[in-house]
Length: 412
Image (cartoon, rainbow, N blue to C red):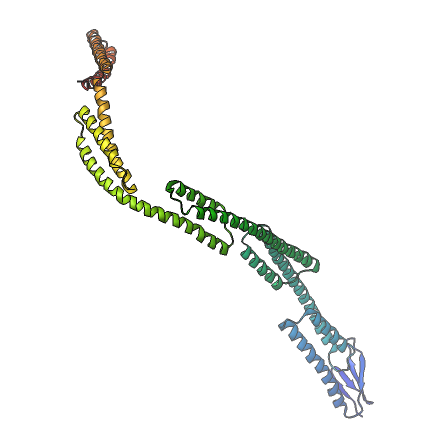
């Protein structure tokens, strides 16, 4: 057999196949006895090319896909074991260098994945801490039970969708979340147990109120019974609500008893108001006569006439409720006018008041006369300041005198 050579290997005369090493030496990779030496080199070069292809594919997967670093490391180790001592002809050391470069890239990728995973865990921990904090707040504060329950269920779904954190933290947070849900459930059950008791007490109280209302519905003591129904209504509002189906039935009975009473009262009042309407017409006539007294000119005559009008008014009887205030208001204005005229007349004819008014006028006139003399002397002496003071005093006293004279004139 003849020999054959290649830049990375050779086949000697006896068919032994060699590959060149990085240190300049050679290493036996196989023996070829079945054909020409060139065929042997081609065969062992194809085995090299297969390694190249496999490494290239791994490089592409590492650079362009999300191949997990651990899987990539395992593949690099496997290929390194395949390359080192491989029975192939080619630049095996170059393949080792490519694997070394891949190993570094995979290491960096592993650190990045680790950092992302740690960041995701940190975010997941923050999310779950927020979920737990909100659940604990709901457990301690929420009183809208339906909304609170729905929100807790939503928080559990958020928990399940979030990334997992380290096992101790996960277990501790889940324990707090479960405790919050249990606390909310216990508080809700306690509330509704208390609410049931309150509703039962409200039912018992309203049953008593219904019995009282039904006992009064036939009463004809209109005033006192109407007041009693108002008190029953006040107690009804204070009693709280019973269960809905009981509440509606009790209210129907309670209101029905009131309706019976007030319908009867309205019928009686309507009949009475029909009688009172005649009285109202009579009082309209009386008011027409009374209003002729205004304005009051003769106090004594007006007083006597008013006394007769008041007697006629009382004799006319009651009027419908809706007319009462209007009619009595008109009579009250007339009475006030006559009373005012009487007071004016008394003040005008009061001898003591007249004497006081005359004394005041006399005193002020004397004071003014003295001030005028003092002013004239000051003018003659050239005392300007004294003249000014006297004029100011005279102005004030003259104003007082004018008012006092008007008061005195009222007694004339």
